Image (cartoon, rainbow, N blue to C red; front, side, top):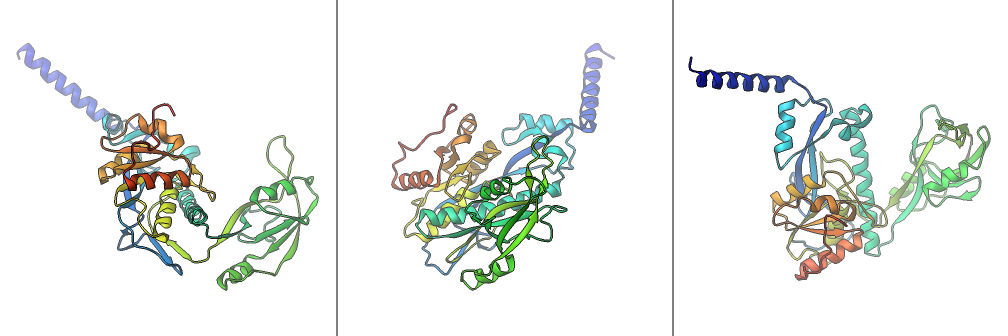
Length: 365
């Protein structure tokens, strides 16, 4: 056999062997890629994403698209060939498995956590949108969760409204922990509550719940190393009641990152005219009850997904700007936002064609 032919054959066999080995060698990595992007002003699976009843709404045009990231499942074992291909591809990203599923978190646990975050983001989107429009929203502090085996188990329940602790009015979730930790472990504390059932009935009837009761709980010692602080075994949260019904219909989506775009969509539907002026605007960002926009993960995959769908502008959380600016898809304009009000101002300028002064994302923000 000629030397050249033998060399080519040997090289081919080695390449085949390496490829075979790469298929069987598993690596601790996962893949992120652009997920679906959905217009919050439009329909999804045959029904409107935003459904508002009990309040006048207005026609809308253009796009206010929320964006998502698709990730490999927690139990999927990526092989070396897939990892190398992903590293070389422009529209995917290979990250350590623990980045997506920390502390051995299962896919079921991750899905449940994402669903809870998505639900909370919807509530905050509604609250921030109505506050932006000057529409009053009633809110109160509630028992969010009760730890199994804690002093509160069987005495307090998720959804109970916390009116006071030891006679001191509670106005924010943090007030509860501050008041409880004034005690030493083993001492008693008194919660004044509206039971969850009473509150649910009052909300349904659009009345104010008046039935309260006092619940005495003996505090326990925290498991926190070295603190020894008193606890009762609950987490406190906020619940709201709205003057009309706002439903967000979007299945198979999780996490908090659509909050900003949901809020903008709600504002657009409740006000005359069009926020976008018919333009295709996409974006991302968490949002809290006061309209503060927070950073999210997978920004580079979301910008790719938005541009692939046709977006011209991308509303980008301030703290994600530097990362997003490193590799912005051609034809997509990043617009830096830090609050819902920032986003509203940017949309007003986009609608009017005043784009030269839009807040920009740069590598160093």
